Picture 1 (cartoon, rainbow, N blue to C red):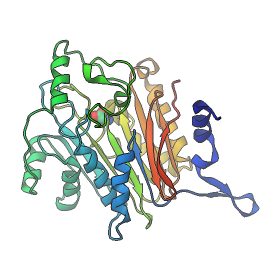
Picture 2 (cartoon, rainbow, N blue to C red; picture 1 turned 45 degrees about the vertical axis):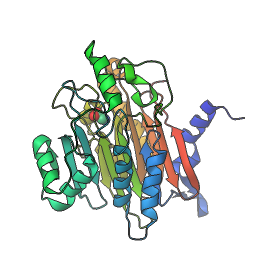
Picture 3 (cartoon, rainbow, N blue to C red; picture 1 turned 120 degrees about the horizontal axis):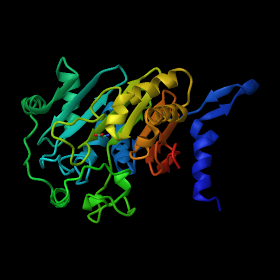
Length: 345
Ligand code: GLY
């Protein structure tokens, strides 16, 4: 039987992932999947939400990625939505952005007490002349758009984690928090991605999709780094850092330590590498190498992961540290989960 290590190596370097086949005269022809949905971490359930949406004839990739983000925002988990870990002051602040196939985009950062930041981001995109709203202004905009103000109470799990964290008040981002039962706030042994209550434990949820009409879209949603300083914003709501789409080229979304993604405009860089002819996987790898090169010893202490698809539906992923998984859904593939190749072993 093929070992898991070999399987990962094979899919990372092999033809199916790169999506090339030989045509007449030995010419390389790109053969991707269309439609396709790809999400960070074990996003199989959010991919299903996207897929169901995209099956309706009048729904687009944009509707699909919004549905994906909404589905995870509605569950209790450490890192997305109102059930997520709070900042140091005990307040949950949410970041999200969305982008379509025509460079339309919308974003919210530091949004409090609103259940679906991704839908507020879509409203910013569609019903305002702006791209990004932050803090109190973002909340005011959401309320004006008819969103409901939710309770400021932390979820039971987040409150327990926060009380534990207050004992040391140590700020230490956890690598692959989604794979680690981090409820102690101090990391811990590897544990399943699902919490005992069945909810999902992960970092940023990013979803990119290509619909059958060839429209690419993406969504990114997070409560940000747990116990961040008040006012801190990561990469997730920043177009070109957490998410970027250029329909002629492809789509990319990021997860992990936002500061390091912002420093290199991570997803925009990936699109530009793809424009130069790199496959989605190679483009993600080059962006990770750029992050690593800035400070190799520091890079050992955090995680960044990227996923990308090109306009033909060829997909790829790459991460700094091992342990970054991503989920795929396409016509003949029933919810595939893969582990990305990583720079550090
Ligand atoms: N990537 C999520 C964050 O840094 O906030």
